[in-house]
Every structure is written in C-alpha cells, then in structure tokens.
Image (tube, rainbow, N blue to C red; front, side, top):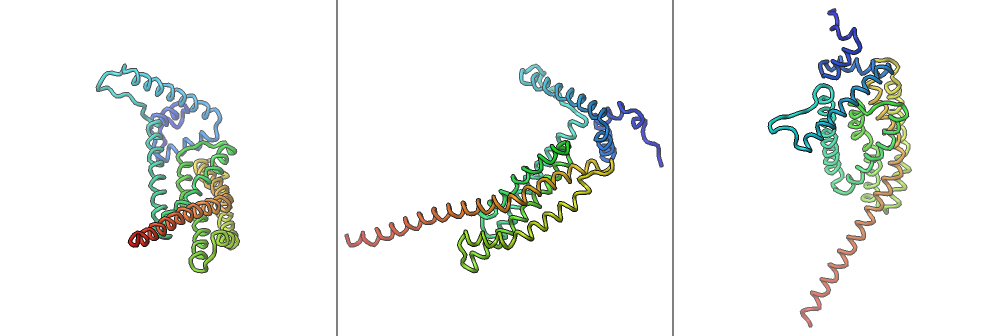
Length: 274
C-alpha cells in the first residue's frame, strides 16, 4: 500500500489542493466527507469560497468596464471551474431526461396533453427536496443534483400509474372525467403509497449518513426522500385537478370548433337556395 501524498498531513495544503482541483474524484470525495464532519474546516472552506466569489465579481466588473485587454482571458480554475462544469453538465442532463421522459409518455399515451399534465409532478418534488436539505443542513452539491436527476424518473411514475387507469376507464368503460378520476384515485392510492413508502424506507440508511464515507451520498438520499414524500402526496391532489382543468378546457375548445363547423355547414346548405 503506497503512502498518501504529503498534503494529507496538513489541512491547509489539503484544502489548497482541493480548491485547485489537484485531487482525483475519490480524493475529493474523501475531503468533502471530512469537511462535512469538521466545523473548522467548513468555516475555512467557506472563507476561501467567499474569496473566490469576490475575485470572480472583480473579474466581471473589469470585463464590463472593458479594462481587460483584447486577447486576454481571465477566469477562475481549480475546484470552482470543476464545480461549474459539473453543475452545467447535470442541468443539461436534467433537460435531456425531461425531454426523453416526455417523448416516452407521448408514445405510451398517444397524446401530447396527458404527458404534459404528468410533468406537473416534477415541480412538486422540489417542494419537499429543498426543505429536506435545509432541515438536515446539507448543501446543494453534485450528489444533491444527481438526486434531483433521479427524481425526474421516479416521481412521474405515480402520475403515470394514476392517469393510465383514468384514460382506460374513460376509453373502455365510458366514464366521465370526474368519475374516472375518483375511481382511479380510489384504486391506485394504495399501490402508489406503498411504493413511495418502501422507497423512502430503503433510502433512510443512506440519508442518515451513519459513517463519514456516506456523507456525500447522504445528500442524494435526502433529496430523493424529501422530493418523493412531497410529490407522492401532492400528486394525488394536484395532478387530478390539473387533468380535470385541461380536459375541461379541451372540451370547451372542441365544442366551439364543432359549433362553428355546424354553422358553416348550415350556411353552405342555405346558400345555394338563396
């Protein structure tokens, strides 16, 4: 087993190497786990990040004033650059994930409207995810964003299970929108709650972070638990309401179109005999 580099022996040098982006992914994870359990190190890192933000603000001011010569590029490097790139990549991944989920639902439901209604569950997840991070005093880091990425695929399943039955009841049994939503909610509420509770319980040990090595993964578990908790219960209320409103609007617009078509047909019949 090889000896670790000397910067593992001095906290200041370790933090410097971390901020300069000189550590591998495993080493960064170990540093972040240690920071999460060391208030003094957290304070030092916070001060160093404040300096980085001040420097970036000064750079932006110089660029806005045109005081940086042409051909000269000034930017922050190290961990700040790595985090910015990682955040940008994760946000792009979220956008692609939402698009793929929407296209999959369009092919499944043969509709553009119903998948759009199902996507309303995604904002509901943030209602629980952000307070969960705030209560547990955990930052919005890379693993937390990965948790949000996972929620995109998790929370929509509840709405899919509910609205799939609603659509089937309307199509095959002639239910009205209201009756189909009531019957679908009554039938699907138990499996939806059981699935959500089982997932939350399975993630509890991860979110608890019993050892220092799981501190980073704890952010992921906290986001998923908080988001799934709020999305599950609000899905049973918000999604049926939005579905009912959208179907009512579509029916009214369709009714106007049919009345206009009948009026034009009647005018065409009367016109030749005039």
